[in-house]
Image (cartoon, rainbow, N blue to C red; front, side):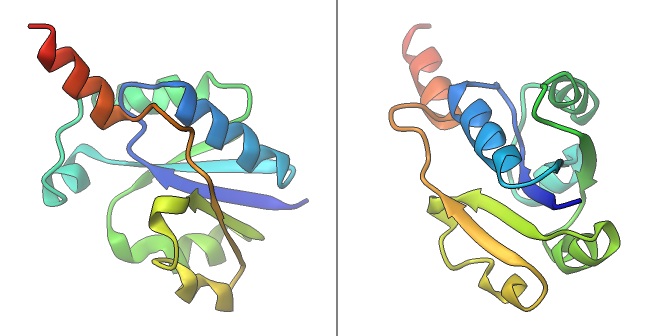
Length: 130
């Protein structure tokens, strides 16, 4: 079985999220999604609308996702790849090169992001409509 993993906050779910999850799933048989915990988001100075538990529940309901695990630190990626027997690590192309250190452990793929949509854009658009 070929296992794929991707990471993200996955707050304010949108078509860009669905596209990367679909394309990641197409690269293997089993897709693990590591989503940032509320505590880790705080360390990154990010605030999510949805709690970790709610984002996990939402991700688990998506047909492309086989398993959701917590992302608790920047440093857990190597141990996740080893623990879960990951063959392919997938991230959006805006992270290009940042995770090349994982090539020693698995294939690393940076996928193009969906044009015209992002969580930041949604937050900005909603802020303009107040």
